[in-house]
Length: 483
Image 1 (tube, helix red, strand yellow):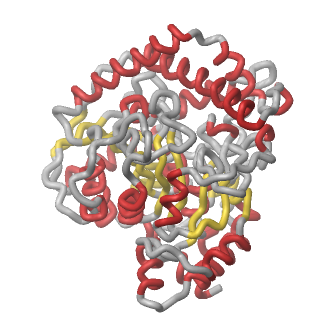
Image 2: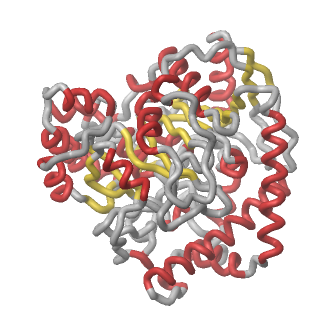
Image 3: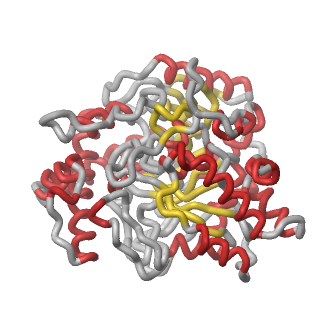
């Protein structure tokens, strides 16, 4: 256990370096990670499909000589196909679905030397910003198990925060990397649209809302992971602008004097919790102390029109997801096979006409241009990641007679993160602040389209100024995660 806890404090680059120098074998890394998972997962319910024996066999074999050779890794149970392993998407409808191939991203993870030893909890089809699927039950926050991990990459973020792995796969269609990163106190970068591939099964999702990457404890791991797996796949409909140099080289590089705008006013008019407001002001002050030019400013975004358009696309996307899975499995979708919210969105999505869907995309593209024009004057835009600190479990449950109640609450909870999905811009949640109750609150930074480099340079500077890895949840040290 001492070795397992010692390794838990290392990021993925450091673990891989131990393997490269011959100071530890991949099998030892894997056994230590499995030991940590077995200790904390009963309390957190983050790993829903353990693959321990398969991972042990891989760790004993010949691994690709990639930058993360031998490092234990977890896949989110959504979008990431892993041949021979069930992919439920958090849904009872898919509890027995087993893909026969790897998605391109998973192939790249494996070529990088990562060893997958489990799949992590996610809400049904990744719809909600909390990880509480009926199929597997709630995933619990390592900082306090009565609270949500956020979603939809909550299982991955919980395992990273709890020290089981240094990084894990995550994806983001409205904030699903950044929301759990904020709730769990880890680093979450959503890359530029199409920076990472979705093939071979998918070209894009909902007109490009969804981006693939991961959650990490260190900034350099996020950059190195993006270096290892980014770039277009065969037949991709479009791809992100090429990087100028490796993203890892940006971490620790001088960002110069950045022009940073900040706002605490949500375009939708959602009310922001005082501690989330304080987190933004704290981050703005920190950036100013680091020598950046910081001022309060925001683009003029038609909030109601944006929300309506985004939800139109989201409803249609849910209907598409259900019908795609029905086609793939040959099963007939019926209400009892889905959660009430998913079925309600499915029925609403089937009513979205083609002209309505295209009009919604036109609205979102117009708003994207407004944001891009605003970013001509600023290098980075700082906002709250979320409108509230991590909420108690059950906050997004359906109400009697209203299956959409949780979704309506979600719209209020995440008024900022979808901005970067609709525009395609890179954005990150950085763990710089904790509430009076000891719960993490992220600061949200949006960069220009294609410019992850500036965000990584800034994130590296923030990490050096306020090293969050020194803060660990109680369960990291083996204590109960309840206050």
